[in-house]
Image 1 (tube, rainbow, N blue to C red):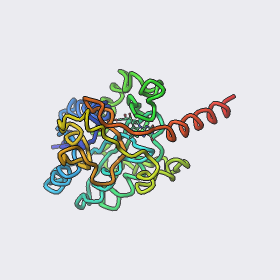
Image 2: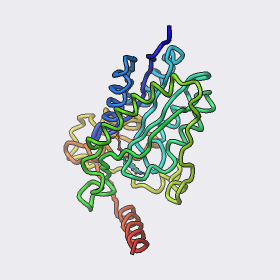
Image 3: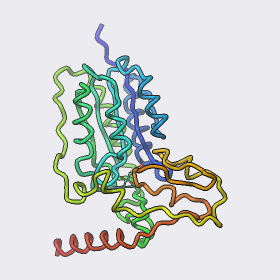
Length: 277
Ligand SMILES: Cc1cc2nc3c(=O)[nH]c(=O)nc-3n(C[C@H](O)[C@H](O)[C@H](O)COP(=O)(O)O)c2cc1C
């Protein structure tokens, strides 16, 4: 008998503040399930735990593997890139990739594909054009978010994600689905923000001890487990520079000096405006 359903899994990372990639992942899963196929969702949250999850997973029980990320500085979040290198062999398996971004994903999916192809995964599709509400401390002087990203992913994008899930099942079952090509070129900012240079270029973390209640929320939400309480929060290693700790600190005890970065952003935006006129 002809099998028309598949067994699939989607692994994704998505920040606690915005949850954009999570919403898209859930819609794709819904689309896949609407065909009678199964789709499990694995929410990657913390580097150390993620590695344990990935190592224990039996990927070869699935026909299709999806991977979703937010875009950080024109890359997949670096801790996710490091994790991808730890995946076991995915030889003979099919997969798809997706990301949400403020509108400039750069070569994020291509970067993921290169690593996963080395693991043997055949990447049959992907989407990098879904927008997600972009909240970053760099936009603090502009109201705290990128105006054009507000309200995203919107209904149309969520419907597209559902449909994307449905078509993934057909593409997975079709033996002649070709490999998907993604945008490969990095822009100058993407080249500049290597993991090492990011540590130098983005601001340091400061703590006002008299405001800090040592509640530990910053450590709990840090995706790379960089923060430990000693007894106050201490940043122990290089991180993804997501600044979620600063954004979400309940007593605003964590602060960073964004003067240089905001000037860089303003200059970039004014150059882009001049080009348009
Ligand atoms: C640290 C950081 C860096 C980001 N860098 C980019 C970027 O280079 N290009 C872009 O279009 N969006 C960028 N964004 C926006 C996010 O990709 C976007 O908000 C995404 O939808 C967040 O997904 P999530 O809610 O699942 O975490 C960045 C956001 C953060 C927090």
